[in-house]
Image 1 (cartoon, rainbow, N blue to C red):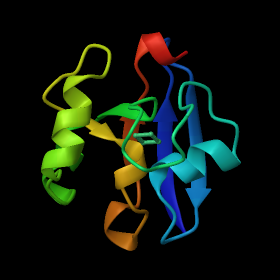
Image 2 (cartoon, rainbow, N blue to C red):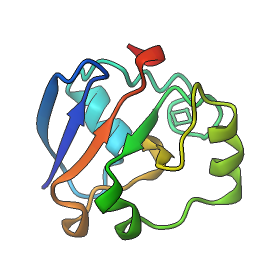
Image 3 (cartoon, rainbow, N blue to C red):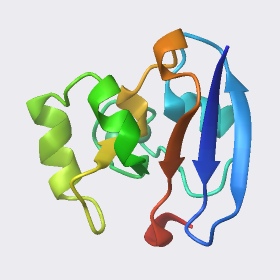
Image 4 (tube, rainbow, N blue to C red):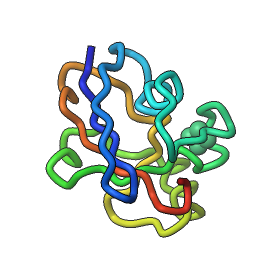
Length: 106
Ligand code: FES
């Protein structure tokens, strides 16, 4: 299990144990975390799973593929720490990962 901390735009925090191998998006959907809709089911076609990753975790994540970067460009208020949560896979290395959902997705 990987502990993922999901923080809503208003600061409300949800600490969830997500099964390794699932995506951060799937962990949110299974636990009814507000702010992650995942309309496309994880195929990098919607950006409604957009999250801001806490800075200290950025280097621990695999680099975003070009398709993910393109989709983030279309997301609401992208920042340099933006990622698509459907592309982040829970693993021991990411235990404690902190992500914040954008206001627009609330
Ligand atoms: S769920 Fe649609 S891009 Fe991630």
